[in-house]
Image 1 (cartoon, rainbow, N blue to C red):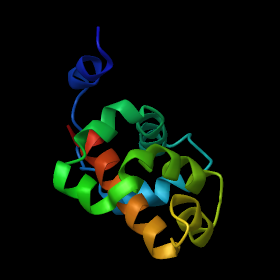
Image 2 (image 1 turned 90 degrees about the vertical axis):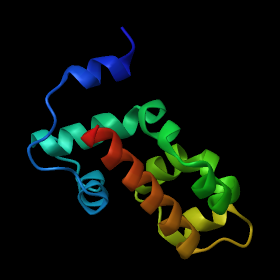
Image 3 (image 1 turned 135 degrees about the horizontal axis):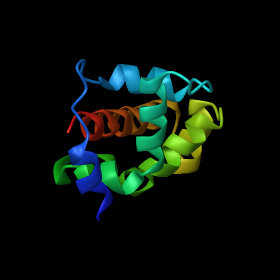
Length: 114
């Protein structure tokens, strides 16, 4: 069975996930909390959330749109936003990284709530 169908069989969370919560929980290493574990599990299955990226947002993000899973990985590794932005684009900065991470967090929250 396809993973998205498996997730569809799970009960929806009583309290919806927000992008802010996803951002915070991705920075936590302790996954004993069920919500933190769910965020980490969903983040690692990038095919579940990256396909939710609307075309207009992808266009606005430019080349960063295809690198959202990598951006999440870099954030999890503790790489500073200004370095992530530079890796995304030669002239990129912290703003570029934060924008890409915000979009990824929103998509992960959406996947968790679906």
